[in-house]
Image (cartoon, rainbow, N blue to C red; front, side, top):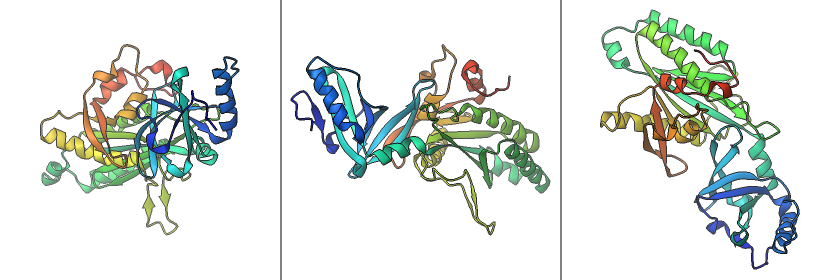
Length: 329
């Protein structure tokens, strides 16, 4: 197939990087070839099948690291995914006819890509705990009241898991695409409103400030609940394995180092570039010029970028007309 001189066929090792490509089901290979031959013959009809927007970022021995754009209709939403070499079928395009490269993939892999769930992770940490402990400011009574208040917030958000350990709180929710390819359950702005609630709780009960790190993307526990508790009640799993959870910890480490060395000052919200870009900001707010810094993105082995700002500044600049749930004033 694809022997015409106007076809550009790319082997796995030579897939074009950092440019627009399309993901397409292998079942459309014959129809796509016939369509393109008709294009070359100046008698083209409608293009067959459906495509997904993507960009290849890195070629490994056994996989392609891709940026996938599941929803470019209502927000700029980018998700880091991995295409195993075993699921790669063919990459073909035609630069002479301005036809972007199409990566044809295994049908089951593509179906799973659209059917599975994805996750948003948040890490909330208290500031000044060591000093407060040394001063005896964190009594057992205060900590019990904090735990009770977190229980109440968790009850208000049953689709989000809440896991606390030491002075750290981990949050996780799942989102998935709808049948029309839009992802209405993806609502990262909701975590900003929840963080605001936690700010009030920690200030009122402990007199401490907090900060939050946010990431989103593919999670290998994609068919599982947001939290697992064993039948014996002594094993708790956050059901988290994948790029966004690893990024969460790396961003937290990078933020601490950057503040300590004076690279940038402290803020209360830090988020990976992909979740930052997916927020629905009001027209006129230039999200590209906000404070940002690089970090080592694990698993992808590529440099990452995190953005930082105050929660209030972000809340003030959200496009409230485009958000499906009520935001506080």
